[in-house]
Amino acid sequence: MRIALKNTTIDKYFDFLTKLDNISKKRLIVKLTESIEVKEKKHLDLKNLYGAWEDTRTSDVIINEIRNSRVEKKSIDL
Image 1 (tube, rainbow, N blue to C red):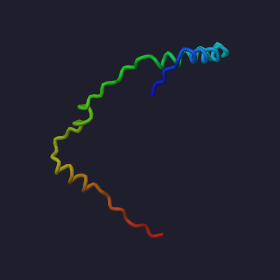
Image 2: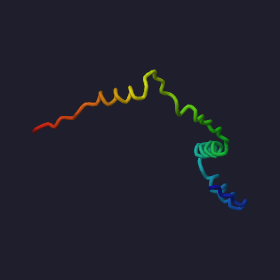
Image 3: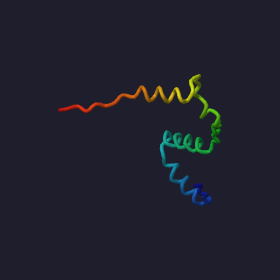
Image 4: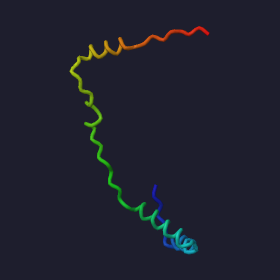
């Protein structure tokens, strides 16, 4: 959400801000400058989100290997 201020409101803020010490003014200037700079959006290539798995085995072989590698939990008597 963006708020547009009238000149009189900006003048009131400025009068208040002129009372700040120089270090605080500089930090405020940096923050305000960073807030108006246009930041380039990173391009998201959906092709990078899939197809990374490469294997010569068939899906049936992979599924069988996963099932065979499962370990059955044994109950522990205390």
